[in-house]
Length: 426
Image 1 (tube, rainbow, N blue to C red):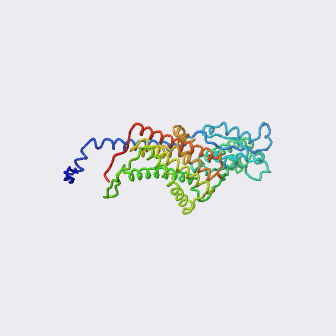
Image 2 (cartoon, rainbow, N blue to C red):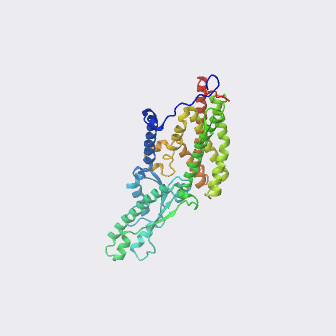
Image 3 (cartoon, rainbow, N blue to C red):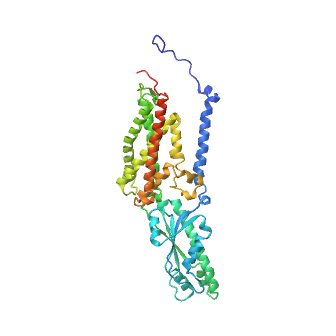
């Protein structure tokens, strides 16, 4: 506007073709886009591209219930021999075999502490010994128990390890039997060569609407996205309403009068709105997932409270990061809550099957903490030892860190005189 109040005549308009020839215009977008593509590719694919080669110490229960007497010339029964062979064999580096009773193994399946189990029955030695006599009534069996509540990939890896261990056991016993009964008929020799039948059963069953153990991960992802996107929407909406950002929808552009308010009070306003709006977000999320789509879920009041606290903790963290980093805050929070969180969550690929860098991130990355709690509520009867207690503690720590970090930075900026106040005409 000129001194006499008239609007100046618009100058010549720039052309896209001319602007595209400016190297400085390309520089920063090209660097950031390329860097993002590289980091996303390395982080996401690095966590899932080779789970079997990275597999280390996957928790699996091994139950030896064999009560038979040792065979002639042997000090231990076959169950004890098999247990020793499995725990000291080639699967010892990829599996963390836990020698448990049947009741203990079931408890650890029901609390998500193991990915599967291998059971040696009470009559194992007796049934093997009977194969070379006329008293044989059935093949000896070993039972593989799966735990789909730990995720389809984790359960699959455990099933493969336990099945291979049982098959090797069968082949080892078969060599002894065929060597001891060289006069057996061909059909009998075929049976004796692979005498043990491996039976697979579900050790901790899930409902038909649990996504084969993946509903907990996707529900957690919804909570994180609700906190992340909701926090950014609230932040941008407040800045626009207070006159610190332009509001542009299609061809319409407005800039509201600037409200004089410091950074600390602005953050307080955004966090207060986040606490209120999260009630609606979580309620609608549960309504859609459980009410409309029919996701299997129990402990609904607890699930709502947990979902609210988890989403709120993420939202407060987003507001704190945006207040501290300004324009690039959304990018920083995306890396903190999503980019680094997904591959280190342990929800789709077990943490025992990812490189060490992701296991390190899992100790503090929010998505892993939230996923453990959701999984405990949905699949493990809301047991504290299934990960729920740790999840509550980490949610509280995360919320406190977000509050302290956000207000520490805004108070510092305000005291240093870094004001956002840029008056706009009414």
